[in-house]
Length: 185
Length: 185
DNA sequence: CCCAGCATACCAACCGGTCTGTTTTTCACT
DNA sequence: AGTGAAAAACAGACCGGTTGGTATGCTGGG
Image 1 (spheres, each protein chain N blue to C red):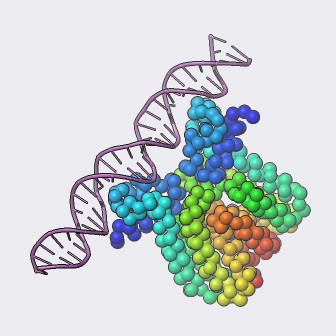
Image 2: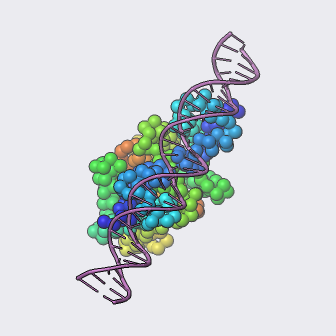
């Protein structure tokens, strides 16, 4: 793999785990086994440019993943259960769920950097789009599909925060059980 | 007001706005118009001890606030609508909602510091308790009250994240409209 | 030859934290 | 009430380490 992709991959994980300020440049460089020269060659604008590249990479990774799950299930409800089930599995095996959220970056950077905020917004929108299209397939109206997809995104993101504080997958399990109540046209 | 309370008040806002690492000690001190000596006199263990004090202070502030709203309304649904309405009003007037969330601290510190994680967990639990008790008053079973209160907490916290990225109060408004679907025993 | 692709040395600024010194308050004792 | 010692409440200089960023040097392939 080329140096640039390697950097993005490793930096993405570190940003998710430790946040933007929490992940130091030197730390990232050491993890990639490269030096400043390489970083500032590929990302002349430094750390923030790297972060945005990471968010874009994350965008593709997450959406293709969710999309494949949604293609494998006929109804939105089943697909949602499968998606959450996967999150729970990751959380229980890897101990953390950092790979599928970026709430740290959102809450840290949304008010500081417009480009970063936009990149995060694009990611959320793309996830909601997948939900929304499936809901429309299920017979939801366009408006209610938009509302419900937003609701799903919010509750899952919030549940992940609760999982973090509780060091447990229970919040996600609870959300999963209550989802049918929301998936009503 | 005494110096210690002043420090906690100002530091709380800065931590919420910029996160733990994002808010520098010198920055906090300058905002309070005090010096290192004062800080390390009241908080010998430094920044992290200050953060925990902030989280505890925030705990009281938020819960008394929510509790008063919940006392003023008869049903959980009405109380929730009022609570969210207040969040929306704050967001639209102050431009930010930082004062009522601490997701940045959770996602940043949960995996780094146990005391901080516990303080955040206590805060979420206390909020859920208020919801849960009201739900039981409304006739919910103990189990379903626990589930629904968690779901409400998660979706509101997630919606706030979405509001941050969108720079809009729409996600909270959407959540508010869909809440009745979840508040079914 | 040249230029993309890196490595290395270096930088000022800032980080959280410690230490010592000074002011202010408290309070027991006469 | 007056006094003086002790303790609390600060102020400010200083520290080593780290931060993100820059400038220059080297190197191999087209």
